[in-house]
Length: 121
Image (cartoon, rainbow, N blue to C red; front, side):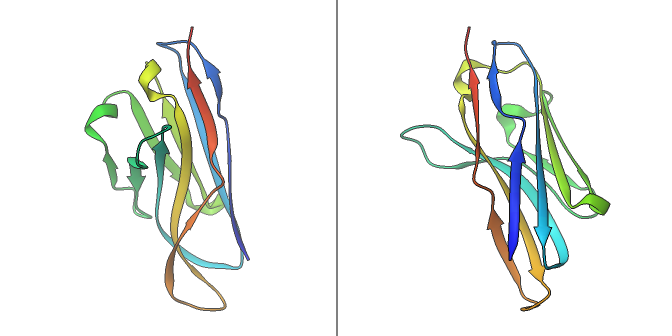
């Protein structure tokens, strides 16, 4: 079994900061890209940021300059530092990892359960 467990969500005022973490565990052989997505009520899930095992990053235009994605390959963990948060960024944030399980040795996407981020005064 593979699990992705997110943490770090919560309530923050506009302009504030939060740091999300996501740890992958289980019978993992290798992890390729990891990333963060978000979904607001009534909207489709959207990409926030991704990072490859080599450290190459990709960001949604709306978060460039404010959010930073990073990862610790030794811990199978990805982080999202979010600064200058806006009310419209209130959403459930989901962690994603493209990985190979030891049992199957084929690439597949796995998702965490999501963590709520609420930006409100």
